[in-house]
Image (cartoon, one colour):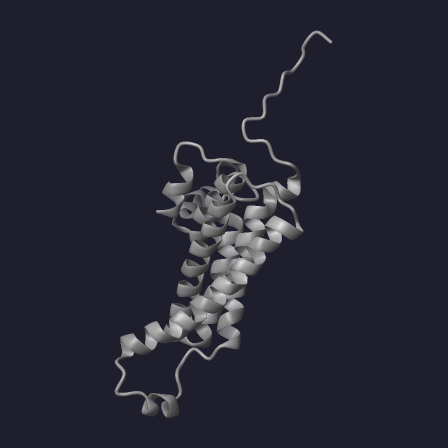
Length: 184
């Protein structure tokens, strides 16, 4: 063998599954936020509004969103702890892993809640379309450089891109403040 290769793993991963965990975990968080909007009525009934003391629209929006956010945070906590303890994914920064899930949960649930409150059932369809776009453009399964030019331009605008970056940094290690830039 005239040539030999010396491999130095900068951010080693225990398996391919651990490398794909950020994508599948954030997809599950997004799908969970969509399912919460299927299970929870997006609007408050007139009977409930009559019981309240003349609530303003922003109060109704915020109060109902907080219920959805609480459900989403509970779902994300359960899932992230399952990744850590049941699936035994090797994570360099477990607390940052949990934090990235919680931040993604709040962003995704706010997006889906706003779409459904604003557009009704069409908002659920918008959430489904957004999910499809994010699967291909989140820089998770394939490097964005290998994707079509349009997707490469849209990728930085997708929240899943930044959630995957945060989870990757928490799992493999932070490089050049990438976790905190993605969180911002």
